[in-house]
Structures are given as structure tokens and as C-alpha cells.
Length: 119
Image (cartoon, rainbow, N blue to C red; front, side, top):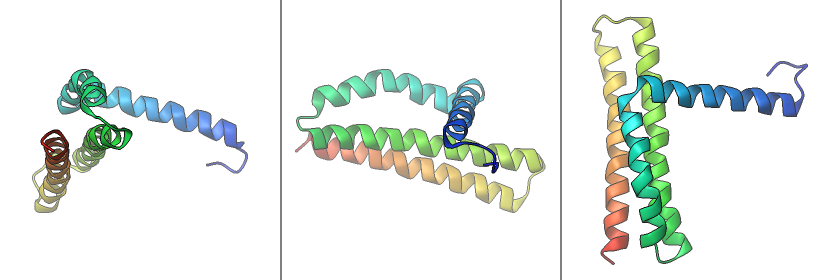
């Protein structure tokens, strides 16, 4: 933040940059598009199937976590690709670690839904 930015001005710019990030994810990341489209079913289903506010928060929260980590993984991949498209062990490891984070979020999502719905 520049010293001359006022808090509301900074909030405006931060919001604009966030929307640019979401637009870029939609435009360039197929996994993110699929997950956003899946949200059209998952979000209403969470409200319908969750019997308590806590259950709804858990059902929705684990899904939002998947979206957040997918965005972070896409950021890692874009940064690595910006540095070089040549294969390098560390670049591959960074991409694999990002992918593993998305995978663990998906496991958490499925596990949470199963535990709540089978209870």
C-alpha cells in the first residue's frame, strides 16, 4: 500500500485486483471453471442437506476451501511457468505440492460431507 492511499482507496484497489484474479482463474483455469460450475449444485445442496447452521457451515466451508486452494495452486503454477517452461525438479515439486494441497482439500470436502450425511 502506498503511504498516500487512504484505507477506502486501498480497499477499492484490493477488491479490483481480487476480481481480476477471479476473472483470470475463470479464463485460464479449467479446474476452477469446473469447480465454480459444481458450486451451482453444491451450495444449494449444502443448504438443503445441512440440518443445523454448523452443518451448513461445514458443508459450505469445506467447498470454499477447495476453491481457495485451487486459486493458490493456480497462482503457484503461473509463477513457476513465468520463471521457465523448462522442466526442473524444483518447479515440478512446487507444482506437485500445490496439486497435493488441492487433493487434500478435496478429501476433506468429501470426508466432511460423508460424516455429516451418514450421521
